[in-house]
Image (cartoon, rainbow, N blue to C red):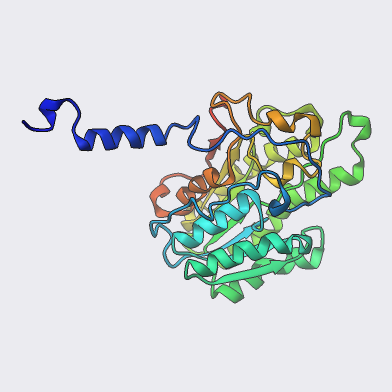
Length: 311
């Protein structure tokens, strides 16, 4: 008697098991983090639970073989996951990050090098004019070129009311989140030719702003607009510009003044998928937009938010 006549074939059983493993509601754990606090900017390695940046869970397929990328905020969270994914897809990667995040950055550099790729560490502060002006050229010099820029560095600090939100914080949030994109993208374009890509990190906050992070949400809406405008400007040069809009993702940003401490245990539970995302789940979106597989996509925002409806 053949397997089909017995009900379920081994191949069908394996497919059923694989589909169950890919269930988006359970593929990654539903975290209920304890209340915790770290001074800004914080460290992934001291976050409970430690966010999954793909050290054990991301497998590359060579989609970015030979490419050269700079990822800002590449030491932790989404930026770290993207840097590791890019390396495992065959790219050499430079990461920009704050000097205070060196412990996290070392993990990422090690993972890039273990993937057999060149890793370049570029510590500095995007609030520093000289650093902003030179970080892209430094990455290109160390990597021997540059054809991918991921503008990912971000600042998010909660304020209960507008009266509590200082002009100093607004200036810092706008400088890091959106104004630096102008500086870094301008510098990157000097190195980029046809087939190059820029990918910006925006957020679901661009569409559904949390009233406690007015400055952050406003920058994310601006990033969407910047992405669409720049994409049109450089399209004739064969350069594409897109954005990824994550929803609630479990990163150190949430515990270093990014969320009220009392809400951490239920962070992300209100999404349709019922849980917060992990940084490694964001990485494939960036890989796709940076690769030739998305060659007819530019000026778009890819939403990776656990099923929340967006425009």
